[in-house]
Image 1 (tube, rainbow, N blue to C red):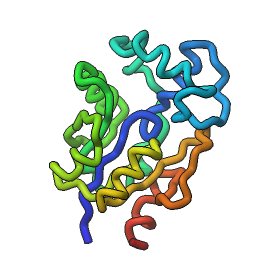
Image 2: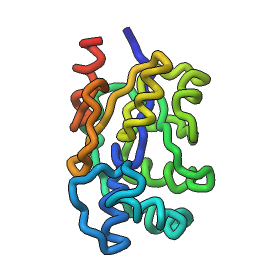
Image 3: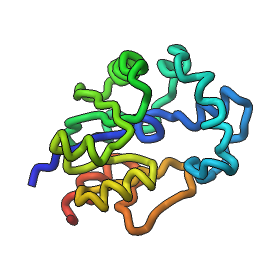
Image 4: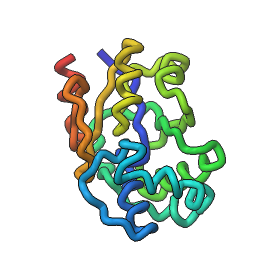
Length: 169
C-alpha cells in the first residue's frame, strides 16, 4: 500500500532544540523537550525572541540526512507561524530536502484528514497521540536529546527506519 506521508521539520529534519540551547546559553541535556514547565520551559518562554529571526531559522543544523529519506515525502507539516513559511522553504531547499508542499497547522490531525495524509513523522508525543486517535499512522521521531518516548507509538531514531514501520503495519 502507498501511504501519503508528512514530515515535521523542527527536531525531525532540523535541530531546533540544540539551536535554542546555544542561542540562550542553556545546556543541551537529554530531556523531555515537551515538558512545558520543566527544564525546557526556556524554549516557550523565549520563542518570541527568535520567532521572526530569519538568521536563526536559516542557520539551523540538519538533524536528519537527506540521503536517509528512503520514502516519498508528500508534505512537510509544521506548526511554525505562517510568517515563517518562506524561511522554512528556504531552509529545506538550501539543505537539499525533497520538494513537497509545506503545510502550517496548529491541529495536525485535522490538517491530515483534510489533505488525505495517512502518516505523520513528528517528535511531539501529544500530536502523535491525536493522530493515532484519529485513525491515522503516527511515527515518533526521537532525537538523541529527547527523553520522552511513548511505547504505544511507532518509534524511530533514524528516518531510514520509516519503510520498516510501514511494512509492519
